[in-house]
Amino acid sequence: MYLRIQIKVLLILIISFNIFACAQEKENFIKDNYDKKEYRIKMRDGIHLYTVVYSPKDITKKYPIILTRTPYSVGPYGEEKYARFLGPAEQFVKEGYIFVLQDVRGRFMSDGEFDNMRPHKPNKSNNETDESSDTYDTIEWLIKNIPNNNGKVGMWGSSYPGFYTIMGAIDAHPNLVAVSPQAPIADWFIGDDMHHNGAFSLQMSFNFFKNFGIPRTAPTTQWQRGADYPSPDNYTFFLKHTPIKKLNENILKNSIPFWDSMSNHGTYDYFWQERSNLKHLKNIKPAVLIVGGWYDAEDLYGPLNIYKTIEFNDKDNNCKIVMGPWTHGSWIASKGDSLGDFYFGSNTADYYRQKILIPFFNYYLKGIGKPPSDDAYVFNTGSNKFYSFDKWPPENVSSTDLFLSSNQTLSRELNSDYIHFTEYLSDPWNPVPYTSKFLDSKNFYNRTFMIEDQRYVSTRPDVLTFETEPLDSDFTIAGPITAQLYVSTTGTDADFVVKVIDVYPDDEPNPEPNPNQVEMGGYQRLVRAEIFRGKFRNSYENPEPFTPNKIEIVNIKLNDAFHTFKKGHKIMIQIHSSWFPFFDVNPQTFTDIYHADEKDFVKANIKVYHSKDYPSKIAFNIYGETK
View: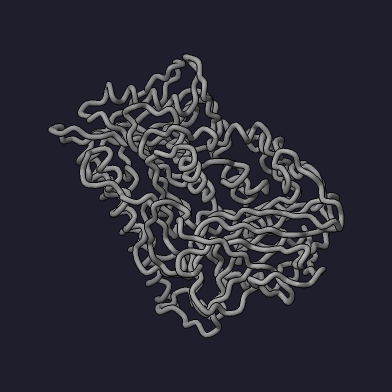
């Protein structure tokens, strides 16, 4: 036993050493081939933004600029300290670019006041600023002051920096010719990060803002540390801190201004509306390459809807989208060959970087090669293959409805019964977990839950399941998914979670090799899911209570998917009323949930109707030969 432990420790040390050596090698390459300078660039209102420039040491050529604006720090700080990674992929440091990184207004070493998702001002006066103007002023200074630039600028960023990238494309500087917003934020109430259809992303928001949301007192090079909450089990921790206000009372103690603001704006009012960037995406001049992941639990809504909005508003746009089998930002440095229990058959992220990303920037910033020719490069998560289309969703699709039916079945035929329903008891003090994994407080969230086996909840009495017969041919969905549910509740509010699941045959062989020791027979693979806070069923701005036991319609838009359910598989739909603690628990009483008391949390009997008069259904876009 002692020898075995020694060998294990030795292997860990070897792996750690190799990782450190690899990182050090990357840093040395940048240091050997780039000069680093730090500047404070003056904006139109007199505020200075801290900016780092890495320029190639070879000054016999002119280079384009790639700019990243971030709230997450441009460190390491100091001209003698070098980053280990520059650009949207590791290969870019060998392609020859000037890399510029900037702390956005009010973050780290930049002056000014920070504002989360700072609202865009379409009609600014001379000295008014927003993220678009700060980007414009930065580019103006860079073009005039950085030696050996060729006059062309690109931008890229992932997640929050992806938001700053797309904002820079609005009213863009004429020298900004290409942008790649990756996992960009579009709307923090409807679908990105903090809320989905009004339901609060509890676990992720708390873990993010308890550090990120601490106001700084002066420019700093250091991250600020928030309150720790040692807990071996996030599910239990957040349940003990329900209602939500307990987190503020016991841990945050009103130290996070944006948390307080979120709590005071529980509807889609001006606070959230002015932060949405979709209404400003008009007349976008730079070439745009949007990148997103099908399994991105944080910002899947943003990439899809920013692309669709630009396509709708600007008929002559130059906007492209890539959607791969990736979690949040994992396309930047990983192989993208697997996730959870599934292997995708190839290094999908390598393909994207080599065949799409690098050619995109090389063409628009250097005039080298050809740009990606199609508008959409989209990975089919069932057939494990990239497809390219002229647009997304593709044109050759047809709509197909699958109706919820008696005996937990799912069918293309409408149920002929006049009144029929399936019911469950929803208990807010025993919520349905979003993952089978037990996570401690050091884990942000389970990043693989969007592809996880759903058998861990399918037998719960508060989870409804409906499934088809085994398919007699492949069935490929491509694009948005909508659920129309006819429901009633004994309460006055309710959440509804809808999951689309690929059920594998009982005789499905296990993978080889099988490091996770997974049993694939009967595997219930999550394809797409969404939550909807019922009081917003008619308006996000003006919530309405349910009338107890009255049948009402709840329409739920799920994010797009591209997935082939193979012959012999079954399609399953799960419906339930909690998804905890990724999302907060609905008390099932119509109230201000952010300030609710324990007495507001009540059990509710919920019925989902599936009959001739109340035909609950799921609508898919069916692609190609599976029409």
